[in-house]
Image 1 (tube, rainbow, N blue to C red):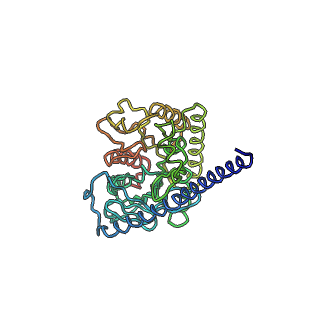
Image 2 (cartoon, helix red, strand yellow; image 1 turned 135 degrees about the vertical axis):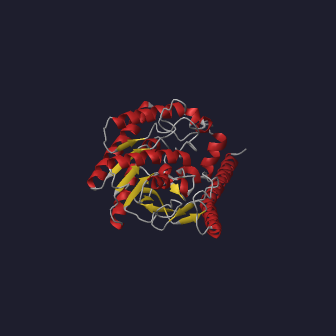
Image 3 (tube, rainbow, N blue to C red; image 1 turned 90 degrees about the vertical axis):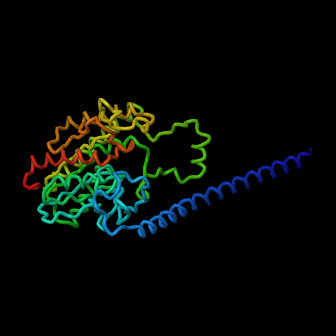
Length: 356
């Protein structure tokens, strides 16, 4: 073959490869555009269906504890505050225009005190109905007290403080604020980067077609997990950041001049002596032992701060049944009932005027 023919052959092959590469890019770009469009259209359709199914009133006990088919929930995009939920109504899940989740029961007739509940999805009540949330049970434990649930999804302590700051601008000061996020940051700090879209955690890479294909078929890491605190260094950083977040939240809260608590809600990683009876261990997969170690490091550091306003519920659940619905520390209605009773006991002890 002559030298000129070889060059032409190489040129033709290179051209074909380049054209194939361009086609791949166009296909990938098309799917990257179409996937969000399809997801958005599906969410709009689901919203319309739930609006048509919206009941006139949700009565306590009329729905099951756990909502198996969880709808996509609309969220606000706000600087520094994840997962602030917009108005939504569907069976068992009702959120007002100002972001308060319903307690699934009539508002107390003679309201003398108002309590704000802040926190992440376990406090908000992910996967359970309105009447089984922590705020609903707490309101039933207190007398003439309105508990307003302003918790969000994947919302860390800094977000809780900003949420309080925002509420303070638009509402009268409450009689008490409960920040139930003392166990949130350590879990978020050991997870891969997250984003909230339509009320769900979405990994930033999840929209890329070829990345998903690689992870599914080509990656050697078949047991991929979003846990990133395997190393001692990362564990130390996660604990340190979480403690800084607690200190900042406590300092902010003290500056508001309103009584408050910072609550450590229990998680599946708090070192219970009988884990089998409080959670389905098989659901928690890899890294369970390491996660328990990281949480124990953080919990020890938290107690060493000696915060008077801390309510530590890490060991509050008796080992008599399964309380955790998933590895995200989301609690059943019965779990929230037990925790609400303990928080109410503390309120009656410290602030009897609120519960009278």
